[in-house]
Length: 148
Ligand SMILES: [Fe+2]
Ligand SMILES: [Fe+2]
Image (cartoon, rainbow, N blue to C red; front, side):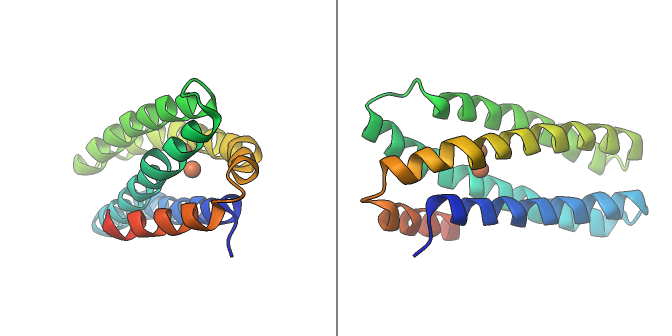
């Protein structure tokens, strides 16, 4: 059975691949393809955030009896990332290459830092703290994933 760390780390890679593809299409001025790919990235990332915000974080917070830990920082970062993504969407709609690529640099840096914190700290903590419920948590995340 998957670990939480393994399952969500793979999902980070799925989102990254879609974003790189969208960025490549913008770089080569293939705007329709870029828009389709960006939409897939957006949906994948919102699905990923939903698995964390609706399943993983609350389960972990209940287990440790606190909402003030690393999950609160991750929730704030999700909001910041959503803000950058809306600027990217805007640049894409206007076919403004400079705007899109400028914001995409910011997104890349922030998203990689965010993912690294989760992969090297938070997910490992959740695998440890939720070891008895790990299979249930992964199943619940997969279910949410298919609904978003
Ligand atoms: Fe996250
Ligand atoms: Fe994540």
